Image (cartoon, rainbow, N blue to C red):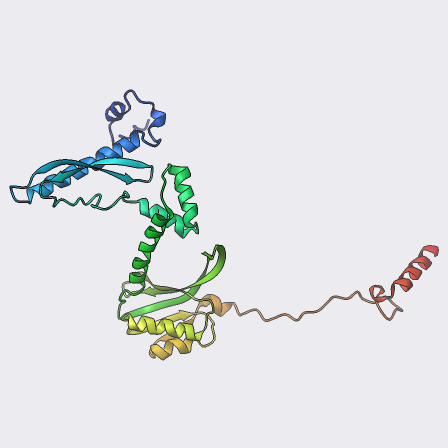
Length: 301
């Protein structure tokens, strides 16, 4: 018979935590889980204060506690933040002016990335967690990501890439209140050690040689000196845009596009009923009176 796996937290500790409480309320707001989160956060803050005072001058010491309400992914909790005499302590777990627990901003960004508007996120947090936040807070959190995105888009790249794939992905993007299907152009580079790196993402309405020429110049300005092999689709003018910036690059058509030729436009035509023997035109093309008379003769026969 297989042995029971030992829990990370002993059962005796859990029994002590649940003593006199309803286990069904442990995961509810202001329940046992929030109490544990509060206790652990305050213990970390006190440990940070001890380490801070150990490296300070002997004259600095504790000076009581200050109250601070922070927003977590399950609700609001009130923390007792330790203070020192010289007011030089700045906690790492919860910064001095931080009002949201680590991980809460990630949930907002995740909902925003799925196409939810700021008003919808506010309503979702209210219904699911009972948290009242303003749309301005949601906008501030999402706008803070734009700086990181801009820094990622302008980051320096390696000088040489043995292989780069250029292609496009079709994704659904919320635009002006509507979800639209747009193309996100991607450059996937393969380093010399075999690891892959997303070099950039570009959102362009019309894909063309001029657009890809602008992308090549951007990669050049970010530090790319040479590309050995560039894998592209069958877009006209694409190879010329690559060799204009990287003359030594070898351009290869993607194997999928190579074996799947573009569909030729089919001629439009209308199927007509074949004329019966002895008739110059199909019955469907006869005048109405003649069709009725012909059917009447057929019934009499």
